[in-house]
Image 1 (cartoon, helix red, strand yellow):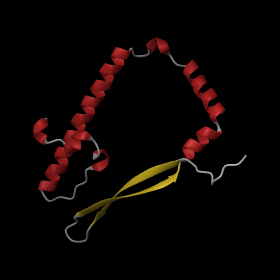
Image 2 (spheres, rainbow, N blue to C red; image 1 turned 120 degrees about the vertical axis):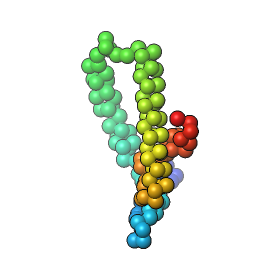
Image 3 (tube, rainbow, N blue to C red; image 1 turned 90 degrees about the horizontal axis):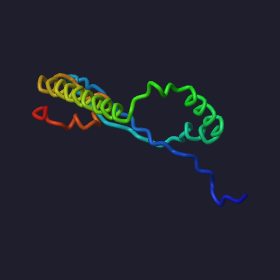
Image 4 (tube, rainbow, N blue to C red; image 1 turned 135 degrees about the horizontal axis):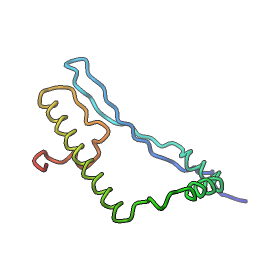
Length: 124
C-alpha cells in the first residue's frame, strides 16, 4: 500500500506552568513552556481497540443501574459541584490577592485558568 508520506502519529500539546523565586525579596517569576509529544494513549487505544471495547463492555455489564442517578438528579448534583467549585476558586483568589497586597510570595495554583480567577471579589 502506498502512503505517499511519512506516518504521522497523533500529537498532544503539553503546557507546563513554570514558577521560580528570585534571590532578592523572593519575588515570584512565572511563565510557561509548551511542546508537542506523540499521544501514546491514543495510539495504544487504536492498537488495542477490540480489547478496550470488550473491557469497557464488561464494566458496563456490571454497573448497578438500579441505583443510578436520574437525569434530573445528575443535573442537580453537577450544579452543586459547579457552585462549590466556584466558591472555592473565589476563596483561593481572595487569598492570593491578600497575599499579594501584603507583598508575600503567592501563586494562583492549578485553578488559575478557571473563571473565578478573573472574577472580582465584589461578585461574591
